[in-house]
Image (cartoon, rainbow, N blue to C red; front, side, top):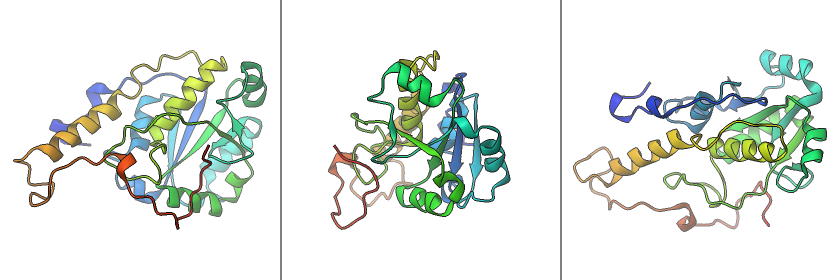
Length: 226
């Protein structure tokens, strides 16, 4: 769905996971489906699907999954009382997650994701999983609340690697982020290209990384900090 000059299809290499990832995509994110990381995540995962919406309370497909897989459906969302994959032993992860877990992921900006969860009563009932993020996102061209906030594809990559530690997954993830990295490389090249007028030619061409973003202390932060 992209011009051939910026197409990332040649860099995709779908992997098969025991875990099924259900990407709940906000409509605003769906409009950016050509280069959104939710769509990219789906392309990299054979065992995944995308469902678009805001309030999933009465969503037929979501409720079908929950009805059939209630015992092993989880929501990836940060919080105090979540099951933290980063600090759990292999036996604990196996016992909690089961053999073929279904993980729901909210794909949208943090404010959009919070609204999706607030409206979706069925998602509120799910057990939640989280992880301790100790890396900085590579998504340097997109603003996030904090530098440690990850994109959808980076979050899923982290979860799969943690499930490998828990011996629930055995798939190879070394190339999982390549499409994401190639997209960023292309966009940075376009921004820095002096002959490219698509990126405000009158503006100073400078890449500002996430750790240089302003911090608004008045905003609501919806994730746990160490």
